Length: 142
Image 1 (cartoon, rainbow, N blue to C red):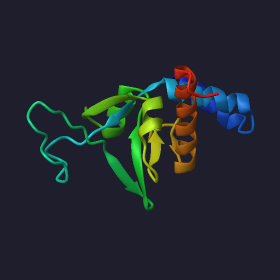
Image 2 (cartoon, one colour; image 1 turned 120 degrees about the vertical axis):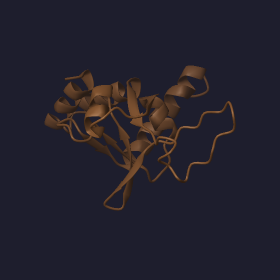
Image 3 (tube, rainbow, N blue to C red; image 1 turned 180 degrees about the vertical axis):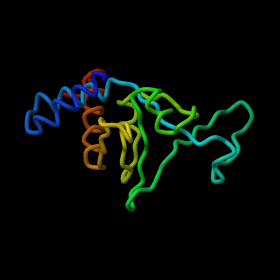
């Protein structure tokens, strides 16, 4: 069980406790996640990258009419979900929040007891939190 798992269990038990929410989202934003990517030969929509340039296309799955970016907090969970070793990119939570586009959903730790969906409004809120922190860090905000 990871620290993020522990915080999720605590959050689920105390949904209305701002301290539990803060703890979970702080851990999320400061953790790194493994995001499965398309293997070159799998993605027919991916343009060929110019020589010397790497392009990464995250695997986005559609479920019940929504697009989900899959995130895993351990490589073991990613490979367990895929049932094999897969290509991936490791991305910090704060970078995911800052760069996700609406109406994308996230699915964290799919097929585990610690799975958590993130809806676009929740992701937008995390994006605002990251922007506020960046402004404070650079001295450009209150």
